[in-house]
Length: 52
Image (cartoon, rainbow, N blue to C red):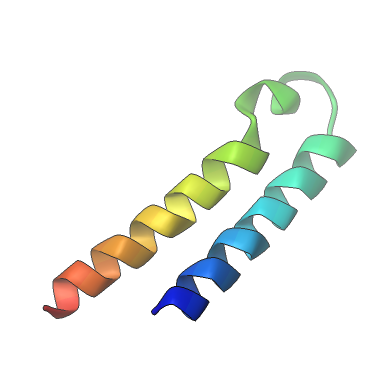
């Protein structure tokens, strides 16, 4: 579980960082490099709670 959550969070952070850097304007206001990892971690936690 921890490895899956860590990998998903790091991948989401990298995708968010690439989107924030490559797209200018209003996209940078979304802070996707913060939002996507939080969503990924939340989905991993909810997935584990659903299994129990």
